[in-house]
Length: 405
Image (cartoon, rainbow, N blue to C red; front, side, top):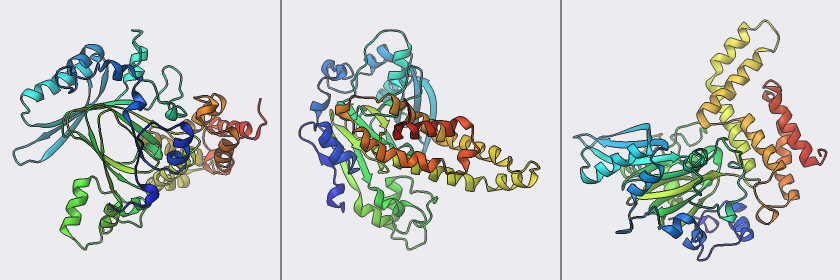
């Protein structure tokens, strides 16, 4: 609608080289849509195993047969007689979830939509000893992936999403401002994208960084349409001027950059392959995001801070308990904090996830990461947390300075 030129979603007609993608999308932090040719070599694309041979819709029976014993969170949206919606989320086997979806096809009853979300298909596939090959191969422009460069059994950010028409993911940004990419294997999605420069306008109180964000596009539009002049959500119209509405077709892949807030709707039945990821380009953004999250947690625990400080009889030792608690709360909320962050950085400095052709050179990486390691060593919490965290950050610094074998 009102996006500035260097924010407009790029639609590539042919798959770009890594260098072009690096410069135009990664460094520029700019979203793009990539063509079907990007995934032409994927087993799931060549076989069309996830698509019905009759009408091209999702082949739920094939998914149940192949992956039925796997598990995933399933969101079921139900409506009552007054049209009010209630969302239930529970862990289910894929078999049970698909049975529910097939029943919904013939008799929707009071169910509006069903969505299999955050399905760790690849991780579970690798652990079931079946020897089956992966349904896809990571495109080379996404190979420099620090978040998923983990050993067998490690946590990952590789997901499959499969849902009925009307299923959706409401307005959010990806964990700690990580990147994401999403490929529609079957079906279509509609995306609403907001650039980082308008994020404050989405808040209830724009000047307050911890203020709640508007929960979804429908609420945003309702508030704007009501033309209310109150103090809450007073700048939504400014954010709406910058929104981009993107229709992602079957076979297309979308790249969502750091700190772009977005909402996603499945136009019809849709199954997609998704990853959250990061690398040296946006690791500084992740670092700042973790800092902000920890500051928010510290403020929310101010009563605990005062209690520990007042009850302390051993000098400054209470700080160790407090900062450890802050880390634990952040991990519960977002999955990881300093320990996970620095372990990820060290792992990828030692063993890059891809060859030199598909990642920036070592000097460029050094300029991005070394200041973070140096700054971390000056943080107060770094000296009260488990010593291994600071040690890991120091190892990163030493590697970047060239002092480590």
